[in-house]
Length: 417
Image (cartoon, rainbow, N blue to C red; front, side, top):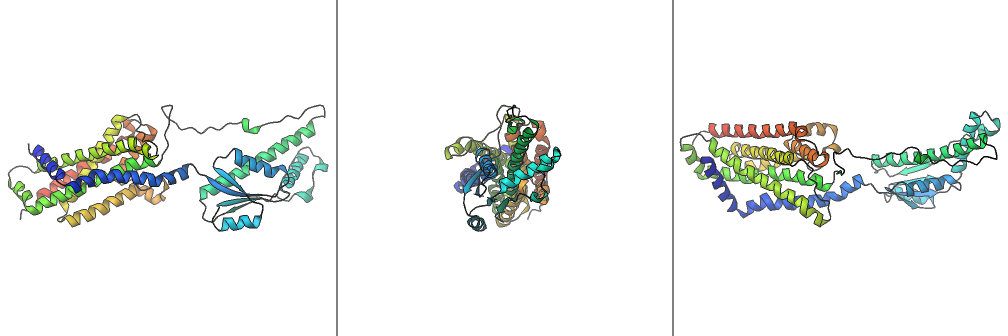
């Protein structure tokens, strides 16, 4: 009976505080929408890299044309900007207007063709094709902006090397046919790109798959952030009751104080679940209206609800612990807000954990928000079973129960003054 009475009292306190209701429900929805919009471009930039590259083609042979065709036709992530002057290209890269420039010098194709002839001459032991005087390397240049990301740099260098290797193989096959075939035989054109096909797939139990984007990351991340900020109304009301004396009157009543604490825990636990439902609805119905992708919930709805309950337990337990431990609202709210921000930053709420330094990635495993975020990510993107996320759920549930028990102990041990 005490539990139900406490839940009713907390409900009345909450609805009589419009500011508190806005803080719990309205502000988180605005926050998740704003963060998803802000981070949509960086997520697209990371996953759908579009790099503008200057190309200065001074080669009169087919090598330069092959390079242009390869980057223009095969790579949708590279846009070639044609320039005729090497000095201009260097200045544009140096100024940061472009991240890279490919310089194909005059005679590069002829040099590569000669080196190819030398290789074939050695294979067939044909001295007439070998000329040690023309063994100079083929000097193509890539000018990089010092601020270019390392993965962009590696992708561009690897792509250029692949194109050159493809051209050289094509010329070698052509020269081999010249050596072994008579004039009566027609040369065979071989497309090496068709010999081996590499497909990019995502392992999934379903025909469709989902990739991490701003919506899939920000909705669960900032939902948990909002749930942990339940400590604001919880601590505020708890300390207010203590200062006004109503908490003292309750403690003077004989019997255990656990029902009172359990009632507070139960009410704010339900508030956290309502937050989750509203924020999920924003991801599913509101995000597409703003031009963003729709939140994909995956197929394990039971696991999703269990994760939401586990996070709600952890958030409510932490808020109750803050409320019981500190004596003034200023202390509780200051420490609580800063600690939640730190836990959120370490847990991967602001940026995904995989882009953090190694030491922070290890520390992040200590954050309850990371346990919840990993569970949501596994459910949304990998469509795993509940058993796969059970370790993180047990951590969240254990954290919630432990903070509730410690809160009851601290509350009970305080002397009545």
